[in-house]
Image (cartoon, rainbow, N blue to C red):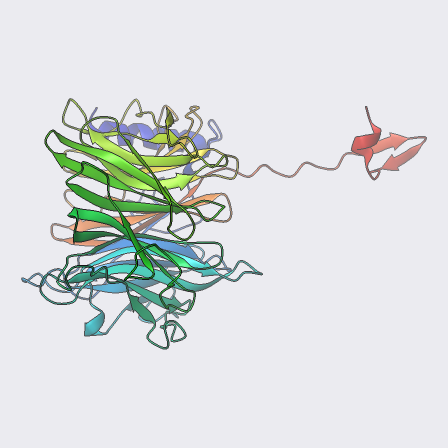
Length: 482
């Protein structure tokens, strides 16, 4: 079905919902943003161009502050030349209603100004929270930096919530390199993901080159102070590190990380083999200190891409990714793996009845009620948009006419090569989708959308209770009545 027809049906569904004909969770939040075409679906989203460099920018994550404002993290390309891998880490502050905060740096935008902190890729952002209040205190950003020639390493930056560098991190540096240089300092090591354990220690996952096999899964852990945790891992000469690889795989590519409530580390990616040609999900569980590992290899075909991990309320591992289907389009391959043994329990995805040719999951998360959110980039030819689904599908979520999901489009440029990069569950039954929106032929901007994941039930009015001629709400009345 053509994308224009889909959008027409979506707009009809939104219009009916606005009249009260249909009430669904998963709609764009009308109290947020002011972007996009001037129609009934114009709210709920914001597009922020970054006015430096080449105009090619994208958001990769966000954190929610105590007052409801947002710090959106991403990058902007600084050059179109041979040094086009030079990007600047960029922070954008949005007010609770989704508008750039004029009191934050340059009209809400802060581009890291230092040349020595230009990076090859900005990978992820997460929040450090106060142990007592739960409020965000620091913003941690994971990047890959080219340090000259073929030598690239993960680089962790830490910011205060006002956008300044946290000079208490790593003895005033406000950053920490995580070099996996076991064989050579010229190794091309790529940051993949990071996650915080319950004690605030930061686990960093990367793809490490040149050790036993072509590439391997590599992990390190930083103390809250930013120093390497030498108690992590089992390598004799490299305290603070560990590595793993899938037997028989020629290449192991890291992509995702999750931490269980017990601080057990779950790392994921793919293992590639040349003979026979296959790319399968590789998921491994390591103890809290990176010692002891369980491997599992699974997939939906011979050409899989793992993009995100989560842990459900029962401790099972949720895997989001895709595979190349028989029609040569990307199909969802989202699995639930049983705790401990990692045997597949079930798939947790269904393709919407009306949607794109390519449908690639980018993020997976678990709601407090155990339901699962999966965020996608969906493409039909040159037109790509965001999609949010809630599993299991019950026909009551989102603005798709069949209730199978929420379609989010920005329509800023000619081809609309928009791309989702992350999903962030918020504190008030809402979720944030961030990525990029194409604004013209060669430019992209930060794209942010906020959706109401679950409409809050109105509080029930207290009913009068009559007993022995007295009227009023009685303490423990629910226990007194049969």
